[in-house]
Length: 319
Image (cartoon, rainbow, N blue to C red; front, side, top):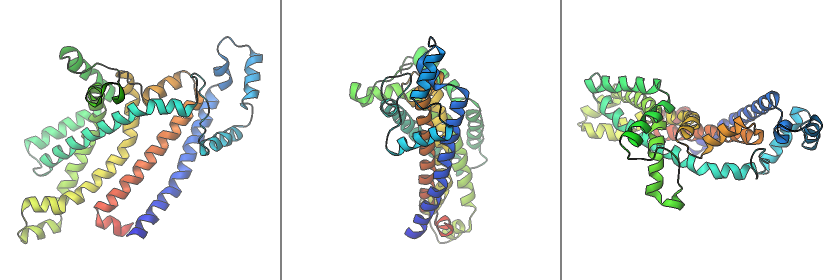
């Protein structure tokens, strides 16, 4: 078993590394082909001579491959460069904005998994009923409505009409404590979790229905195993494997959703930093964030695959 898992991990890493290099290089080429970092550093009032001097001093006049190689070498040694628009290093800037996004993402994913598992069990055990039809309709609607629009609706209802939660902003746990800090993230977390809930619910429902049609379920019932025992000891674990895979794939949805949700709720996280950096042509920050997003997505998919292998014995035998 350990050898199979190790082989699977090595194989995924051998695929992930060139994929990450391709994504970061493509982003590097795109950024430096549509904008001039020397002009961004110099400012709007700089002369052509000043811009050219900055370009030469920072090596922006070198071939794009040489510039990328220098950037990659810095990343491997922990140096992400300096921000153009903000004082300080890119690493420090990302570190400042990362905690709110991590807190928001974990909260949103936790809400999504909890609701999806409960809803999936409720409709998966009784397919075709009125509850199944209602949940299916709501799932389609939830996937169609953008996260930021859900966020605006939540602000209108729970921050203006019924002022229970703050309309936006963020206060860290160290400042105001866990309870107050959570209040700032409840609405953005639900807005971010909406599409995740819908996709997870549909996946878990379909997986449960498929597992209950398997021969081992009929065998367990013939042996006198209770319905609760069939579900807990057999069906739930196998049905959870596709759900775990979907959760891993949803990390990309989580990241892209956070970009807009954080802006709507004025959360000073990675999403807000990304939007501001793109607007301000802060090339080093954008490049670092793309690399971070790519690494997170690839790592999440790998972890999801490993958990799915552990949950599903048949998948382990094929790994």
